[in-house]
Picture (cartoon, helix red, strand yellow):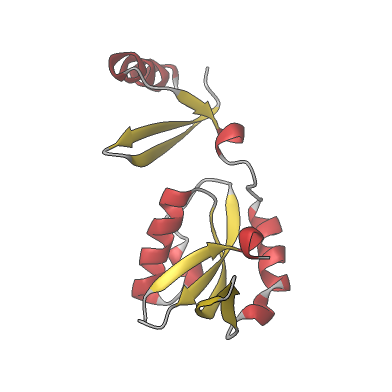
Length: 143
């Protein structure tokens, strides 16, 4: 029985991921059929999300960096914008993008995370650039 896997599919160059946890035998057979039909690869969760944190770890790191809010984010010699929020986010890029879209609509980082039920998290900086567009940067890559 498969405990937890991520099925990663690239369609038109865009990675699409599905997370499966504690599959029944019937679900596992269906997934194996899809894998064989499309010649796909199952990626173990641990290898897919290398630097992921637990929610409590991410909450602690987030709290330690709240002083960055309101500061300009400068990378190299270029200012990227003003840091609007230090937030706990999903660990994978697809769900980070979904999270950012939800944040752009609501302005509430915690509520924007309620769709995400996978136990792998990251901390991001949400930055508003000079054109007013929101972008995110992984805290670990900025520091």
